[in-house]
Length: 323
Image (cartoon, rainbow, N blue to C red; front, top):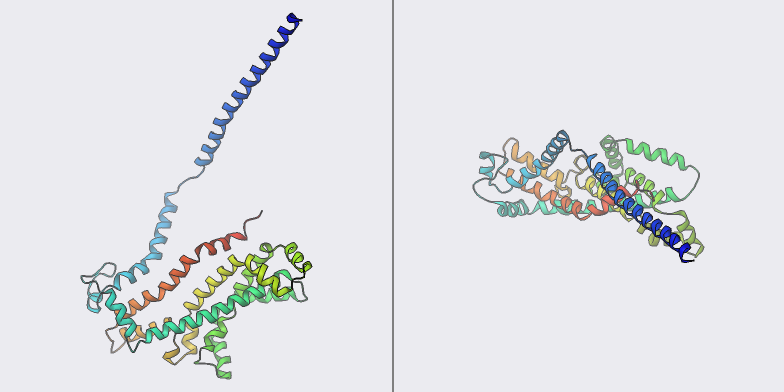
């Protein structure tokens, strides 16, 4: 028996050793392979000097106006016209320029700032709410004429807003709403692009099974929208809100033709009026106030972008990521 067991044990030991060596060799061989694959994957990422140079040019082109405003807001009126535009002057006058801008002409700049906030809060906020409700309804409810509505929305997106400014002015003049805040707020409430964006986002962001489960539990449609759908649509809503805020804040042509009383001007039209006073015939020495006011005007938009950046990025990327 011992003679028979010895070869068997030797065979088992040899097989185990051979298997262990093979496993070790396999493990050792697989690790370099992975490293090679990772190394090869890393080598596939090529850096292009031309593309880098192009991106640098775009960055410089984008930040040059902001740098110009920041530098020239620190200058006095005389140094603004006598020194190099892309570098600081001899005297740092930023704080005094800010005070002069806010107090010039009985503080009209602050009134323009308040008007702009009114147009943004009511107009852009209302546009976001209407676009969210309409886009959610178009994505999750079936009704006759749905395709026709889709075609109308796409057509509205294709028409530029400036092409509708004059017909809108004629319409509002007939009902007596020109030279009032409603002439700016009411057109701002319509956002076909925002509706389309929420529509396409809600198709994949809100599972139909979740809505059916909520209905089976007895929840009404309004409760489903405000407690379930709105939370899932949050990234898309923030994205639409950001677009609407920027569009309303920078709106110039519509207020220009709708408003004639300076007390209802937004910042864009008001600063253009100051610029005309500073550069036209009988120019007034307020060009430094125009530059400083322009810098103060863009600060809220920059803050909004920085604060809502993560929501904006997730909202743009959510529609392209599939589970």
